[in-house]
Image (cartoon, rainbow, N blue to C red; front, top):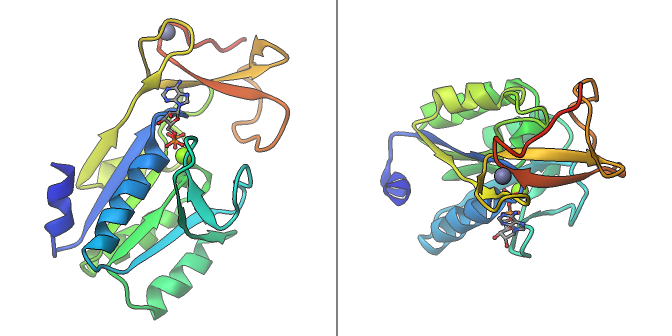
Length: 195
Ligand code: ADP
Ligand code: MG
Ligand code: ZN
């Protein structure tokens, strides 16, 4: 069904969500590669808050990658979307972007482009992550992927934040990039948040 979206000429928004390690970036890269094989022009972005790996690549945990433009603000995406010709707008790690991304995606889709966004649907508390639920609501197509729960090996829908070997507290900030905590995929039953 997803690949049928590649043939729509009327504009559309696709959203790929799930916890960390679910294969969201892998799936985004797969869709970008297929589009390129079809001769389509892709403009790809990610927020430059995410410096875990390469700055100018969308990169997956198993080493797949594709070139992208790292951006600090949505206005940098708008500048390119307004001034360049392209067929597909792709954005990874959309949970780190502010709500004006919704407008950017709507405008691109309204003008006949295929938009593909990928990111976390829930934060470390298991609550909807910023604008991602709104993007899911306006999308033509939502793909919700699961990872493997690192405790019970069942499908994981959530991201466990671990600080000094213990589950993170509810009151911690939602976004912490490059700090000393770690993350793992967990199912609903094994996912824990301390009071
Ligand atoms: P995401 O963008 O959703 O964080 P990636 O596309 O970067 O995911 O990485 C997906 C890859 O991560 C998988 O193909 C697999 O090789 C690896 N991986 C590591 N830990 C897990 C896990 N707990 N569940 C599933 N895949 C995992
Ligand atoms: Mg990713
Ligand atoms: Zn589990």
